[in-house]
Structures are given as C-alpha cells and as structure tokens.
Length: 302
Image (cartoon, rainbow, N blue to C red; front, side, top):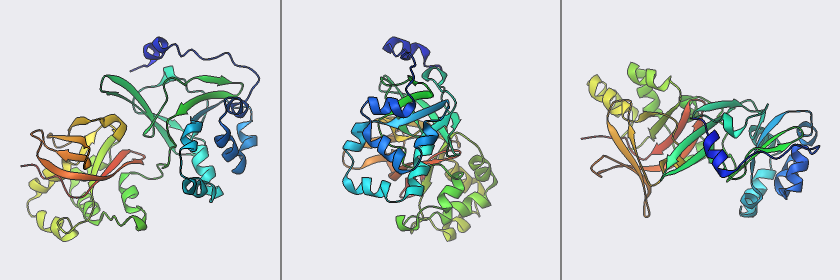
C-alpha cells in the first residue's frame, strides 16, 4: 500500500533542497546529539559526501530522555556506535511515497532496514526495523540526501536469520532455545516454516516443561508436535507497535491466537476466548526474516 495519499493529506511535501548536507541540516534543526555521535564515530566525512543518502534519525528528544548510563553505553564502544549509526543510513533516496509494507532497504552498515506499515486503532503507523517513524517529519531534503525522523533509536541490527538469532542470543540474558532449535531440525514442516521470510515467530524459551527431552518424547506423535510448533509462527512481520492493544494472528498451523496488552502483565498470548496461553517476556527482536517475540512457555491450544 502506497502512503502517497496519506502523506499528501498531512501536507508533508518535501522542502526545497539547498546547499546544506544532511549533517548541516541536522545541526540547523537542533539535532545536536546525533551530530555529536556521528563526529565521535568518525563518520562526518562519509555523511558529508556526495550521497545521496537516506537517514533515519532519532529525534533530539529521544536522546534528551535517555538515562545517562545508556548514553555512556552508546559512546563507550566506538565500533559498536559506528555499526549502529550506519544502520540508520541507506544509500540512495527513499521517500515516504516509496514506502510499502515489508520493504527491505540495504543500509550503509550492510544489514537491511525493514519497513512495515500497520493500521492500529484506526491510525496508520509506519516503522523501520520496529521503530516508529514520525510521520509529521519525513522527506526533509538536504543537498546530499533525505531525512526521516524516528521516535526512538534502532537498538538491534538484524545480523542473523531467525534460527541463528536465537542460537546467538546473549548468554547474559538467561534465555536459551535448545528445545526449539532441536524441534526445528527434527520436524520438516517447522524447518520449512522457519526457512521463509516476512514472518513473526513466538519463540518459547527453554523451561522445565519445554526441553530437548520433552521434544524427543513428543516426536512419537509427529502430527501433534507439528501442529503445536506451527502455532508459534504467523505470516507478516509484526512488531509490538503493530499489535496495539490487541491483535489476532492466524498461525502457520491455521489456528487463531491473540496477543493483547494488559496493564498488569504487559503483552500476553491468549486464545480467541481469552484463555491465557503464555507471557511475552521479551519482544521486537529483529532477524533477516522478520521478528521474534519470546514466550515463557509453548502455546498449547485446547
């Protein structure tokens, strides 16, 4: 779905380009922190180059509201800082009118930026790798590119496919996925599903009730375990921003599950009757194939 009509209604015609580069324009617009970070990472000359570039830039107020320890963490590893910053920039010109759901844009860092467009509570929400784009501040022209402003920082670069993302999950998180990985390698239908693109995976972490031994035992009823596992994947990349207060998903297995937000538990998974199935314990983990949300247990539909 093209966003041309939507942006036109908002009156978001791009400003006439001048002789100001992307960095000059950011400085003029008061985006001091991102300019300082670019300088710190040694990227000033690159982003003052001929271009053209498309820059997805977290707004100044994002940095103003970050705790100092987060700022210190961002600036404490210059190699990681450069990786994160170059992931926010794409070579070439990408206008808001070019936006279609699931569009993939190669970044200067190398990994692809993923564009998603959702209808949430009657409003259009556009994201880049899960971070909302401020639709009132897009298509800002500079002499060497275009700027779109974001409502937050893209914190995670999708370096791996879905399975490898789980296998390379940070050890200090306390989460492991040996049972799911074993199942993916043992059940052809699950392997096929995880080999696809543009999907959302609800990944149960290893727990007392979900271990390699449990999966091995369930392999005796291949139809059952296949059905259970296929209810953990759904077509389409849906970040938490696209879920809103409540969203129904049709799983690859053909069943319907619901993810909804609750004040006391955060995001939970239920069936269509509202029966609790699992807690979402972490989410919005980007992969080269879509997005992963972590569950505290497998989804078992009655």
